Length: 265
Image: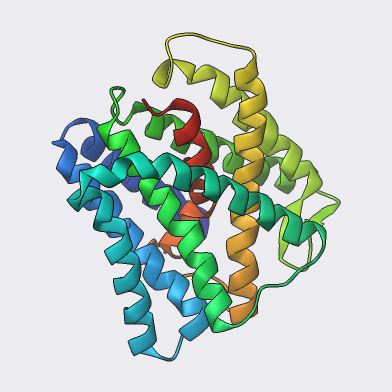
């Protein structure tokens, strides 16, 4: 029987391999299909936060999300609106941060559903912008690496040095020491992967790396708050050792809109 850590590593390696092959070895539509599939699963998992026992309402939510998601693909003229939506999404994540600061709790099916729309759709729109950009999926890959580095750095720093809890009522395992470790790894990765999303290096990338890494933590805590309210340990069971899709992309959905605004072209 494999340990949980071994299962997590194997799942992560397989997932990374699938993503790399899809992004860089297959035609672009294949990437839209793969990421779109993950997006649909994430929407289904989010619906479990407010309607776990009502399959009909969960399906309604997923179908509604899918309908909004395909609009820019079916009607290219709406692509020009997407940057405005990404700016709105960035403001949304600022409000999320403010809700934690002032201890405002989101509850109720309608508010949870609306929060899911604003969390998921801009991340998908950001991906479609990458798909049509001149740099291809390289900025998207860099975004994944930055979020993953922040997550891994936080895990190991928290495991070895963690003492002070970051948000004990939302995610008891997170510590301030882990947060610092995640920020260091996220900033370093932002700088080291700069060749994937730009032709020039600027010191401001380090500041952006901190912003993106911190935003990934915010996304993680945001999804965790809904899981805790719904009484769930994981958002799903699709990824062995990791839980659901949302458990893996919670940090990414918070970073993608800001990253696309900064580097998609």
